[in-house]
Length: 95
Length: 475
Image (tube, rainbow over all chains, first blue to last red; front, side, top):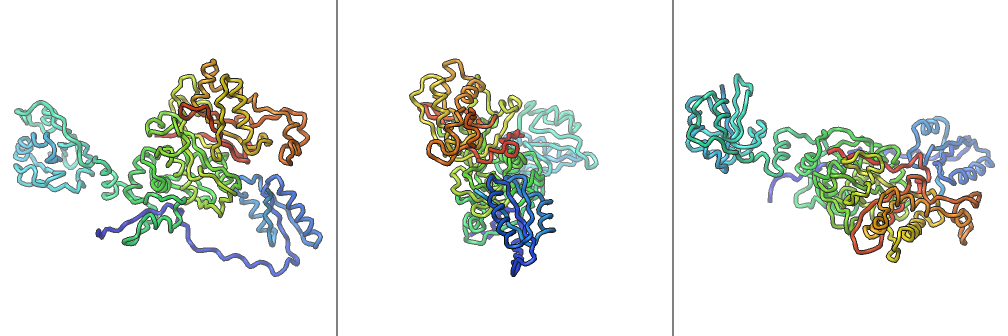
């Protein structure tokens, strides 16, 4: 047997394997501002309009957000707006 | 004046010049390095051992014998092989080697043996790899380590050792640390070296590497929307069509079974792109990749166009590339389905038959929704050509007209299904594809009237956001 070390080169992004802990969900939605993020598929609004109506019936404050296109990640500005203004967010897919 | 000679025993010209070297060693300061046998030439008292080729590598030796002259430590000239006049001029010795023939070519330097340039670059610092080292434990199969680390698409990968990565990098003049783009979904800066590692794993040869780099660059153009293509529920993945001289240089298959297995370049170039997306970008099926069913082409889908007919304008030229250039075109495509049209004998009949096959893309009642590639087989092309309609524009124009249908057949509810288009379009004639959304590509073997359809991504319905792209391959 050869004593030579067998080395491969890492094909990945070499990201840290540390997993960020999730935030604990709120105990209840009392006083929460709820963001609804549409991903801009054809029926996203249909789905989120229904969710918004249900939440409004329960007296929650709802803010609406929309990605320009479902084919690309949400722009950073939209993510920052949601973080700044909302307690929780619902991201809406519809197919 | 100091002289350095690089020789090897396994070279008749080196053996022939031993008498000259002996003369030089008596008259000048001469150092002789032997690449293969430090006892050669025996006639000289002291020969330096260069079997490890360090001196030869550092001096950039391409052939032996090479005689190099330094004045005050600075190289002022070198003679390669034996040439009496050159050696005499370099050494300022008018009668040097007068008894030898006027000239004789040397032999190749061992530094240029297959695989040796990359070995020496790694050993002597000409190439430094920056990717993290992963040590394979003794008695463990490196292919299994690659599986365990999640580097594989399900098939075995070639272990990316330093030598293999260095050889892959020899396929390009681009620097290993050059960042060629940001890979979705994790938006990671990707270096040429990382692409090379994944190209090794995919099974590519170094001469394919410029095609792989161009494919990655094309996929990263914003208008291609690689993120969405990865994340989609739909079947699609990147489909690569390669045009130009590079296809013959690297032996791609545009003939029989062009869309199938059996050709290394076809099979590995598309796989390399997908491994980059997986490993560098973090695009993993079941995670960001949400495809309901996927398709076998998502392992890698790449073929070249048949450019053997002078009447036919290649796909890349039709899309604006300079004639003579090589290009990869990226399409968001599904698997292949066939159109059996063996009875058609004239262009009109054949066009209608092909159009019927194309209507099924995404759904027979959907329109201006998903694009398509029509892979036109030789027997079908011959029907057009024999009727004097063998040019791309003529065939595309006939298909465009045949791919219109009345809205009343397509609206929701028509033909007993809720699928379909907006009922307000009931009175319109509807195009199947957006302008530019049907790519006609020639490929395949003779013997059957059967062309192929590669259906497109449903996000083609947004042509301003999702576009087919072409990227020049820089050799």
